[in-house]
View 1 (cartoon, one colour):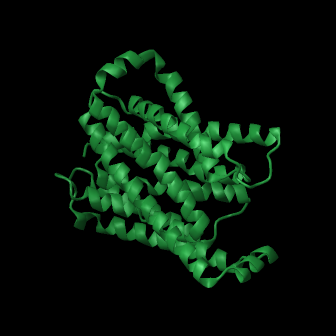
View 2 (cartoon, one colour):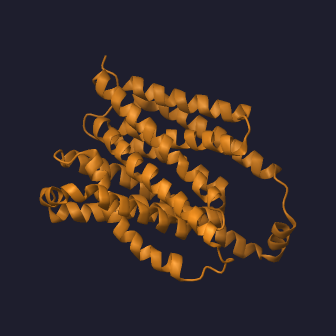
View 3 (tube, helix red, strand yellow):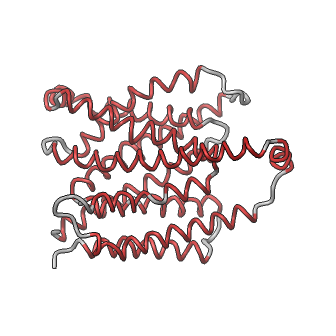
Length: 326
């Protein structure tokens, strides 16, 4: 690849990962609100902002897309936003954060392997070092998560719940959570591949405009989530007005930064880079999520976490080198 195009694509991918990493802080900041409420709120904010930004050029956009393009927008919005987030949240609730992170950590490998089958792609043999480094970094993160989970003392309530719950029910819940995690993995992998191919076919639509159009479609779908999310009682304690204002501020910030700006940067990277490289850049979402977690917890990373960061960075550098022109 041309060096200037390569560097621009990598920079956009890294910036997108930096913004997407903020998504992992939202449930912590809006503790007490359900994943369904977070998802509906985030994508409603995304849709409203996208409608406002695209309004001046709406007539031109409407004429530039056929009905097949609109159908693809609705499908991609459901696949990469609504369905992915709901499956991810369900996997965390049913199977735990550790199991979910292990499965979702396979995303860069899955997208890169699929991209290696495209015409003119870098051979998989040249990408093997990058994939091995990526797998090693993911394993370090998983090891740290497992160690932290084992060291955490169980609360009396958790111990009582574990004693009361039948083993068969717990096993069934874990199995469903595992299926949801793999469903989220498949959902976002399919989205990354299909979205890149659709962008390549629509050269007359800019990545930013495509992100806004995706926001309009996602916002329309989020209206369907709003009814069960906000009108059906969730069984939890009622939120004070101040809690709702905080929630609105969080989902609005996530909708603007992560969805509007982050998706536009990712679409730009997808247009500039082949799947074999853009797939590896998904690692930066994990890296920045770790970095924000360290800041939130006010602690330094452990030795294993430092090794994971070094391995993941080496993986991306190796993959970038494999795509350079001789």
